[in-house]
Length: 118
Image 1 (cartoon, rainbow, N blue to C red):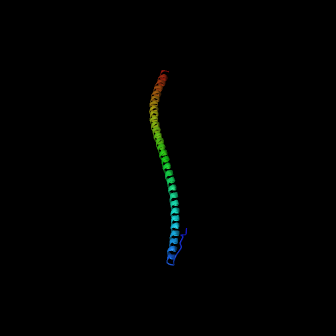
Image 2: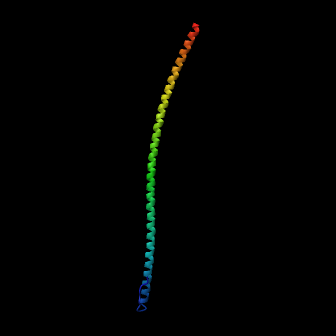
Image 3: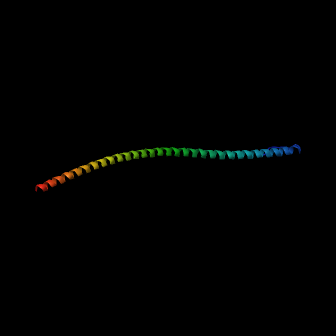
């Protein structure tokens, strides 16, 4: 936007030209500031969006971590139960083995008595 200058004398001419240059420089500066403000505003919006995404992903990861912890706890409990059941099976097997040994001894004695009587 050019300033309306009507120089009355040659002394006023440089003031008028300087005024036009200052006005033009101000317009250019305001344009640059506006451009920069737009770029900053866009960057802030992208930053906000990225921050929201990060927060959402962190929340999702926290939920999944809690789920993994529950699953590990469940597996640990099942492993303990399996260990307990295995110990019971071992104990029963050992008792059965003792009973089989006793019964085998009794059968051998019985068969020996039958052979002696015959």
